[in-house]
Image 1 (tube, rainbow, N blue to C red):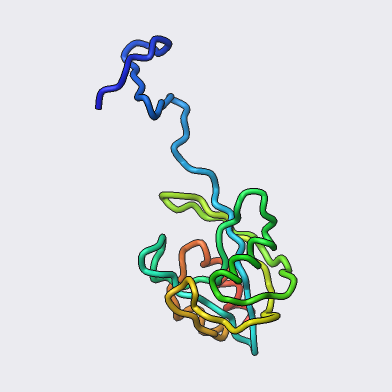
Image 2: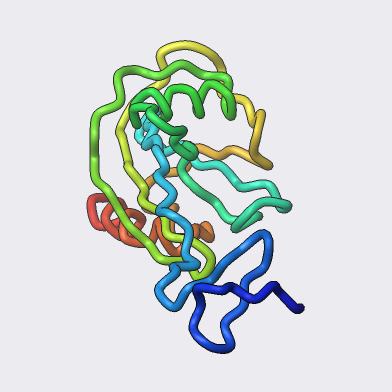
Length: 157
C-alpha cells in the first residue's frame, strides 16, 4: 500500500493518513486488567465456560471481567458478576494478582474471594456454569493465565 511522503521523515520513509509507524512505536496494546471472583459455596468453586465466539472460547474460567476506565477493581467484579451471573456478592477480599502475556495481549488478573449475597447463579453471559471441588479443577481446561492459581488451589486441597 502506498502512503504519502512525510517531509520530516528520513529518506524512504512514508506514512499513511490513518497510521504512522515509527521505529520505536509499540504495537502491543495496554495490559488488560481483569477482576476475577473466587466464589466458594459448600467447599466448591464456581467456574464458567467461555462462549465459543470469544477470546479463548470454550475454556473454563473463574467468573469476572475487564475493568473499565476509572473503575475500582472491586466495583468491576461486582458489576461483572451481576451482568454475567445475575448475583450480588459480599465484599470482595483480595487474594492475588497474576500476569500473563498472550501473543495478542497482556492480561493482569486480580483475584478476589467472595460469596453470593443475593440472587441465583445463572449463565447469562457464558456457555455453562459448574460448582467444582478444588481437587476437580485439574479436569477442566483453563486459560494459561489461570494455571498458577489452579496449581495453588490444587495444592491447598
